[in-house]
Image (cartoon, rainbow, N blue to C red; front, side):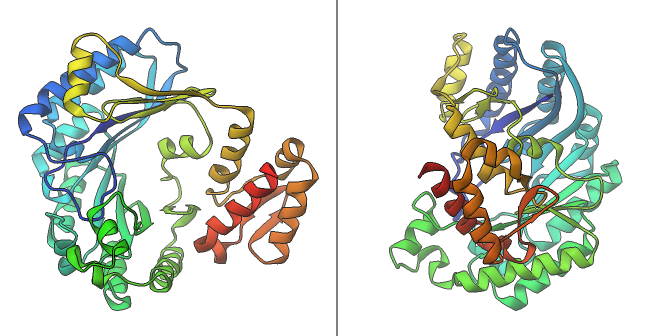
Length: 380
């Protein structure tokens, strides 16, 4: 099985109110040294035994803040030091960072897929969330990428932004479809202590427009509307949060859900070789210093037990609308999980056919209920 390569670029121009990632606003003076450190980590890791890499994903943060020349050097270093036959090379970008000139350089460097964090097509929602771009910037960015020659563009939306209503959500969906993306990701707003917005909402405060968040039921209805509209436009719903036109599924992200090996480079990046998981430290400056000394700044390292692997196969595999092999689940967990699957089928939460278990299409929004029930059966 071929591997995937993920590179983390943790730099942003602003910190979005809802962001719970290990990213932040850093001096642009750190951008080039960071890119150089990535190429150095590639050299250090080149002695590791990895299957051939056929996908690359540079995410963040906002990787499009790096100079095109730096991104080109990173891809060149990958080709030099690893066995590569890259079929899909994705670059994440914020709409306001995209120009026709940069897009042309990205394509020439070897990127063939662009992922844009549109998040909303409503300027009130974007401003409240701390986003720097506006609706018009997303349309301009897509146009610039198409003119440069990109034929694989994905757009992200978030269901549950502050000030979002059924009307503005429907409008955002129609704007998204008019932009004619090849792939779409719809994420539900996460409310937790890890973001300014989440912390404020949990405390019952009003800052960051926390008082203007839609309810859980409203978010679920937004998601259901997206499912209907995307299906009507010919998109395949292949993973809980992802839709694609035929032939445009994310090859790289499929590796995560199928538990294929992937190597993560950069501050905060995670890796998995099939039996072991590890992660780099999150601080970009500390990462650069460690790599400059020739050290790998790994701060987490664990062996994945057979029990953990089985649990991952369940909750990662069921994220895919194709489902998981029922016989494989039964072989590892016995009658307990088969009995639980039958209970869930009777409740209309899963479908069992052709030897596979999958989420019922109209119950995907409550997938966590299914995951918890199956994991309870495995660990009982």
